[in-house]
Length: 360
Image (cartoon, rainbow, N blue to C red; front, side, top):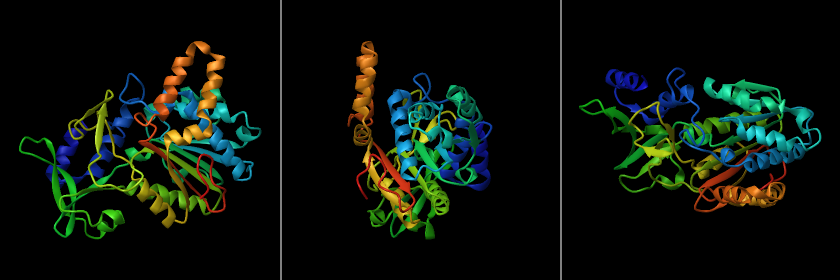
């Protein structure tokens, strides 16, 4: 079991970073959370926007089609999804984008997925689309050329580090064992040079403040910047988190749609942390990417025509009017997903403002 291996590692080498703990718990190829189960759906651990309504994926497909046109309609491009879950969003996106002449002929679908269990589900979901699907393990393995990249609730599961202010230093918050071999948080050594990873606005936070560092976000940004330097590209990320950097512990574990203690049973629950959109945008600009957003999910979807699409579905299936209305509510209401979830677009210089965002 992962828990036993993590305990042995801590006994041998001392406390480990939260990022290392998350990496093992989520992505261990044999016993990791994503390697062993299909976690998405009403009967699983959590549900995402594409599983709530087909309209979400359909609008993403039309967004991708407009982005393809903004890029000059390249004869071939990579349509990439990071962490595609059950494949639902991509299936809905392709169904909608199919209405745009030339799009499907040009699109080469690439799914970035490490879980064998989810790859099998994705293959079954996307089989009826007729699209040729390629799976790769990392963004750097996507074939070269123009690309449109989609990532829904991908960044939130990337491993994070945490640091606590003590005196003039920021100390890494780590994971150790108590006398009963239970996982506990412990204070580690000063961050040293890594303190530069703390967002500028938070470096002067008061004593005992906690900040989260997201090295995985920067790795994704760097990979996109390298790619978009050679060919036109655009990436859209949808995730939950604040528009500006904040202090506080946002690490959480979810199992069967309920929050559970994050250190309790590694490998059996989803571990995530809120995305820091301000830091993400700053890293993208530093990498010479154009940034649009963040905008709230509610504003974005309504701006793309969610209500008009719902009206069309109601007209086609009047008996499901209440179902569609509830879906719109869940996706856009400020007390549901409408405000907490946000979108940011990163793309190569020279492209027009992306759909759903105001001019840069």
